[in-house]
Image (cartoon, rainbow, N blue to C red; front, side, top):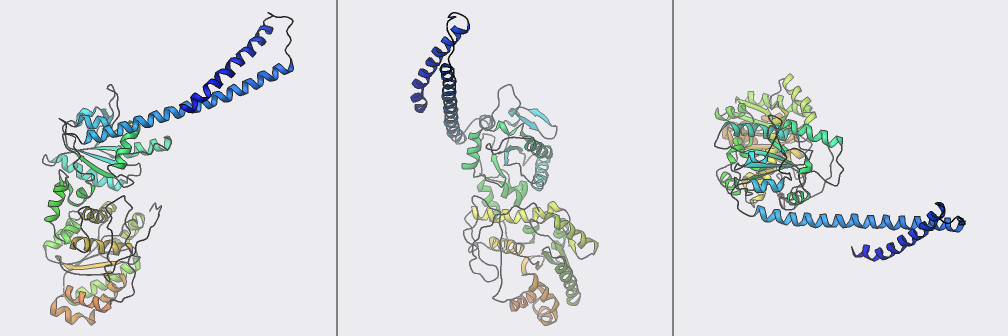
Amino acid sequence: MSTAMAHIPTAAYWTIRSIVACSSQIAGLVGLRSEYITSTTEAWELSSLAHKVSSIHDHLKKQITLCHQHIDEKRQIEAYHNLVRLLETIHMDNLKVLRALIYAKDDRQPLVEGSTNTTVHIDVLRKKHVLLLISDLDLSREDIAVLDHMYRESKAGSEHYYEILWLPAVDRSIAWHEGLQHKFEQLQALMPWYSVHHPSLIEPAVIKYIKEVLHFSKKPILVPLDPQGRVLNQNAFNMLWIWRNLAFPFTSEREETLWNAESWGLELLVDRIDVTVLNWIAEGKYICVYGGEDIEWIRKFTSSAKAVANAAQIALEMVYVGKSNARERLRKIVTTIMEEDLSYSLTDPTSIYFFWARLESMLYSKSQHGKSVENDHIMQEVMTLLGFDGSDQGWAIFCKGTFKDVARAKGDRALTSMLEFGNWSGEANQIGFVQGLNNYLQQLHTPHHCNRLILPGTDGGLPGKVICAECGRIMERFFMYRCCVD
């Protein structure tokens, strides 16, 4: 404003001077001074004045645009602080909070109800438990599919009843265009829960709150609000992925209680992703969980493992759980495994995705509660499995029933141990198959190895240090920037 004020007296002077110059020209044109003839000098003067006044006008227009931007920034900052105070206050119900999150005039219906595709008022969420699903427009279909299953489960029972509201946190610096609108509508069509009618209903102050207070960056988050509009947890995604609706009402205290009741085992690893594996556990069978994407290694390993099971006279079941971040390749691998009858497999791509997503959720959840690989056994095991997945080789875990006795190894050692069963068959008969295998794997261990653990980048929750599952040393940290469609 001060810059503009410094130019306004000059602008007024040149405006008045231009009016005087124009008035003499107009007087001559209308015949009030018939003796007047426009000179070339006067014509040039008018042209110069027009250029000067136009330049001043453009400059002042830019200044007033900057003023409006500044005023809007101040308004958004004030709105942000008001939102922070509002969400720290206890209310009679959650409507005041929801209306602060979603800008809407009184005569508008800002929400879309997914199952009926009809617009509704915010009032439909009054005094209900609400999970705010916050994401960008790159939200994966697998996340939506898994969340859809859990949402329908909650609707079926009254004990864990909640609603979900999708708030798309769209970058306002990118101009909205038809492609983004189509992407938004595609995602919205997949959701049976509530969503905003359009991302523009979410004010910049709300986006600022989502990023700075709730620490949203790229990975979607689920923020639970109780019926009074209180934020119960900054992100309940991990809880929901690990324990499903048993985690309701998704508070940190509930998360701590659930972890205190857990122990590492195949039940926790598989959960209800596949009922067949749970039946094997109940029957006390020997189980081999394996993964990777090298189909030749899979062929050799499964055939040799079956031969070992026959020689050892044990009932061995094998299940393939794939690999994270290789969805299209996994379709071909799973098809090959089923066609060639190599082993049992998680056939649904969403189930394979969920298996690895749960492991990551366990890691983040444990980290948020101050656990580390040094003081938490579950975190050690999760780190080991994620480290196996980060390698180029396959991997395998052998156990009986649960994980009380377990033997695990990456591709080469796992295959070698099967091919050399004769070297440890006697010990297996004496002390048990899994323990005998584990002892032989220790003999095959060499100091030369390379473990990699690849985790999605987030603004928090990652462990400060990671211990190598092979040798127990602290692993180095590197940064990787990846754009990967498959």
